[in-house]
Length: 152
Ligand code: ADP
Ligand code: MG
Image (cartoon, rainbow, N blue to C red; front, side):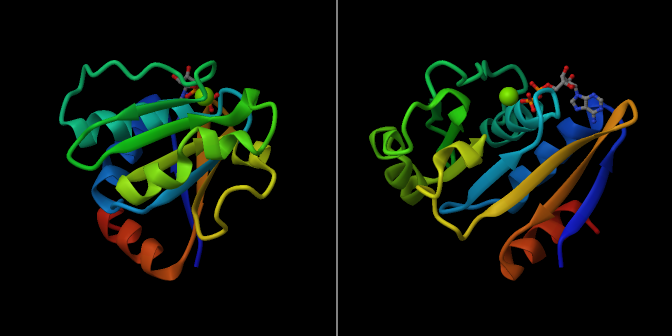
């Protein structure tokens, strides 16, 4: 069953990213949905820094490059498809290779128009008051891993 978590402030989003870093493994595709400013990049930065074990690692937004890759303990590819012109570009960006090597985080997956796998972990960030809420859905075994690492 889907999970639903309140993220009261930015620190909570960062903690959530750090906890998710413990839950994810090679081959996980995480689709990140939500309006501009909902916390997708804040979450991604925290997750990547946690896997890197480096709180100061530069994690630039992939807004213009469309993808940034990180050669870490588990390699991470961070996509932002907001500016993708054609869903066929997903292939050129190396999505499949990145997924076989490690973890793919994808902001604006809806722009890929079906060119991404269906078997995803999906995080949907929503504004709620001054904070945020996140809905987590995905295959049952992935949700079980996530629940364990979040201790819920
Ligand atoms: P997105 O990538 O979804 O457009 P960003 O992560 O770039 O969003 O920006 C989110 C903004 O909201 C940042 O200024 C960040 O500090 C703030 N933020 C992140 N999480 C929370 C939260 N749980 N509550 C309040 N503000 C948050
Ligand atoms: Mg973003």
